[in-house]
Amino acid sequence: MKEKIPSLNGLRAISIIFVLFGHVLINNFKHLDAPGAQIGVNIFFVISGFLITLLLIKEENKFGFISLKNFYVRRVIRIFPVYYFILLVYFILQLSNVFHLTTFSWITSLTYTKYFHYPVDMESEHFWSLSVEEHFYLIWPCIFYFFRNYRIHFAVTIIIIVPFVRLFTDVPVMHLFTRADSLMWGCLFAIYYNKILSYLQSNAKKLLVTPFLLLIACLVTKRIVTLFFPDFKFLEHLTIAFAGSFGTITNICIGLIIIISINYKENIWFSFLNNRIMNYLGVLSYSIYIWQEMFFSESLGIFSKFPYNICYIFIAAALSYNLIELPFLKLKDKFKMNKTIGQLNNQKQLIN
Image 1 (cartoon, rainbow, N blue to C red):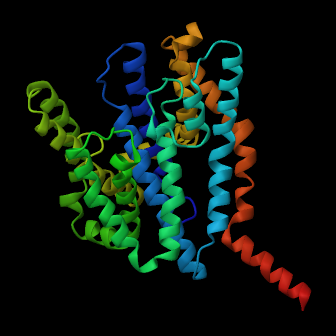
Image 2: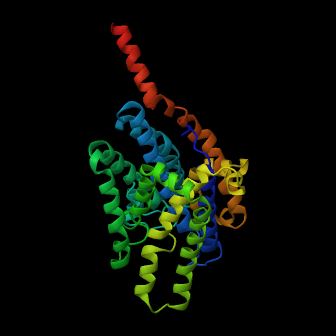
Image 3: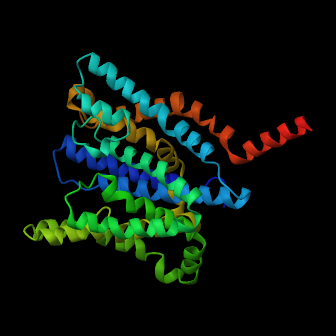
């Protein structure tokens, strides 16, 4: 597979559009049960699991092993700079008496533990998903490295257990224990990438549209159950566990859509995902996600009013990407395995 995987930025763009749509409805139009944000985050989760595992497999196949050190350095370079920069902005706004984050909120934000108690304030509550991702990055590569023969067992165990956590417990939906299966589904789709692609290609006409239709059905089913069967709480929990914005069937559909989107290039969907606008939105998606809640905060007054806040979100995202993220991203190449091996070989030559 090529270094740059097609369509993923387009899928990230769709994810962030869903997130913004949901948050506009919730914050600007007060539709508390608005659709969008959760499915957007879930697409991000499945993509993360898929991409990280695919890169780990590629590195292992090429060199026979993976470098955990390089992996974690690359993740830090990618995630930390803009994240801690926005916390610095929040701190300045708090000193200016604009924001009022609690001490506990600061602790959970600084330590990537937000999902343990995310609804403290709206300005930082969206960091729950980043804390879920960070803990995934911490755990999965170690499982991948140290327990090679048990990777699939680990992923399948998480995939089986988590839906029942959603079904039978009161653990919040914005929590690692209720969303880890999304990431693990992405991992499994990467591990079985070639087999799934081969199956899709042999049954192309029958299956290509199916995951799209099924995903829509999952989202609609959740709305129907909530609207027409409000008193049947178990039915609602059952739908959340296996359908809705982040249920098992939903995750499977997203995984299939990712593989279809990457490989089937002669169609409108591929062209749509890979056009300049969608690609650019995908590139900015992390920055947009980081900055968006800030401009939904009523503490900012006119800066939080729709549609001006959407403009401010994109301006902040573009500035932070170009001025903060991009300079750090250029450092990532230094921690690629081929670079590391090349440096080691040069050192050996010097010694000899």
